[in-house]
Structures are given as structure tokens and as C-alpha cells.
Image (cartoon, rainbow, N blue to C red; front, side, top):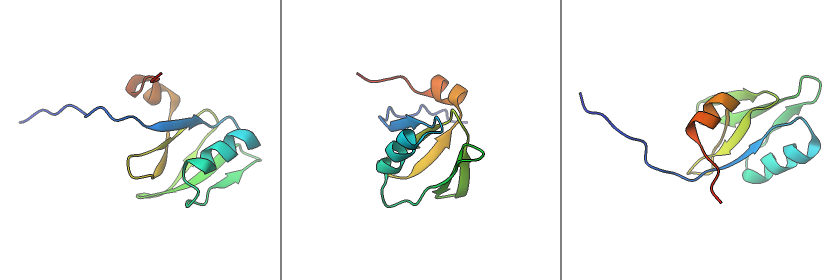
Length: 85
């Protein structure tokens, strides 16, 4: 069986903290995608290539290489990504 290593890819991401400012930043990642916030449960419904996904408070919202948005749990995000300065 062959083994593969992920290519290094720089992505943009915003952490969802349940306020209007982070929502607007996330929406600005891809203005063509309509995000639906649920302010009572602090979640956002994100349409993805695989169907709708729900981002919970504290999740990172990532813009992929083709402009698509998807949520990522904080522990997975921190294991997978590091900040580029």
C-alpha cells in the first residue's frame, strides 16, 4: 500500500465565537455562500460540497483552496494547522 503526505496548503480561517463580528468575518470568507446563524444555539449552518454542516461555538470556519467553507473542531484544527506570519 502506498503512503501519502498532505501537501502544505495555506488556508484562511475564522473562529466562530457567537457574535456578529465573527459572523461577518466568516461571511466575508466567501460572500457567495449564504450562512444561516442560529443565535439561540450559537451555531451556524454552512452549505458545503457534502451538504449542510453545523458549526458550533468555538469551531473554526475554514476557506478551502476552491473558496468553499467548512467547519473544523478546535482540537483537529490545532493538530492540523499552525499560524503563518
